[in-house]
Image 1 (tube, rainbow, N blue to C red):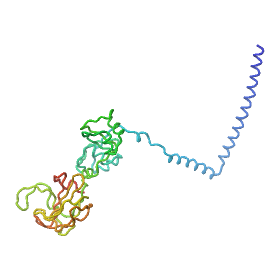
Image 2: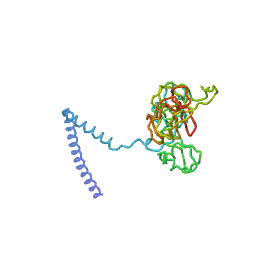
Image 3: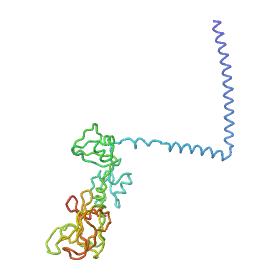
Image 4: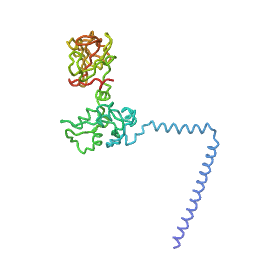
Amino acid sequence: MLVIFRKFAVTNAALKVLSGALLLVLATLLIAGQGKSIKAEVAPEDSIGGRESAVTAELVSLETGGLSEPEEFTQPRMLLFSSYRIQQGDVLGEVAKNFGLSTGTLISVNNIKNTRALQIGQTIRVPNQDGIFYTVKKGDSLESIASRYKAEVDEIRVANELFSGQINPNTSLFLPGAALPWEEEQEINGDLFLWPVRGRLSSYYGYRRSPFTGARSFHDGLDIAAPSGTPIKAAMAGRVKAVGYDNTYGNFVVLTHSSGYSTLYGHMSSIGTRSGAYVNPGTIIGYVGNTGLSTGPHLHFTVYKNGSSINPRTVLR
């Protein structure tokens, strides 16, 4: 018992000495810290400003050093929709911009055929991400579709909640990040073609009474009255398919364009291009005249889509 007591006594004494030493060290550190605090409080303003600048520089360095974007913007997302009611004065492009989307996204999601035909009060769907819908065709695979539309396979899987790589024909898939072909979007917006000549519309597209026979007949283009010799311009980039003379259209030019479009320009006084030439929008291809079956100087302008005429006013800017 005595030995045990002595060991305890010695140990207790050692602890007391050690505790005292620690207290002395802590007191010294505390005094030193207080001294620094006092110095900081009375330091000149330029010293304080320098310290703040250093902190700012460090924050900027972190910010530009590659901080990752929030996960919700970098990871594939499920497709979700909200709705919007068209208001007076709305333009689809501005509506899309307000939601951080492309015009083509709203066109595709809502299967819009003519943006100029949107009605006040009409409700459209607004997705939570850019992209378009695509109808799967026979022989398609996720990889081939993604490659064609510059999309990511994983994003297509997540957006459409696909649990396998198998897709069936006629299935409608949302392709995140994909865009409508330029020509298709311009056509739907009614901005695909330039007016080939400025003048007065003397005859419209559709059925009319013939000025020569008086019988009801179909007029497959627009007649634009203008002074003889007025330059006629290519309405869209393309290649000259044919030039020549026709008993009905007089001196004419036919252009072929992308996406199945072609245009006819008739009744020219003279032709200003040649067969096989490539023309840009606005290139002069001839001049207004009164040749062929005509009642006065004007341009007959027809737009064809896959070989069939369409109303030019639906695609003219």
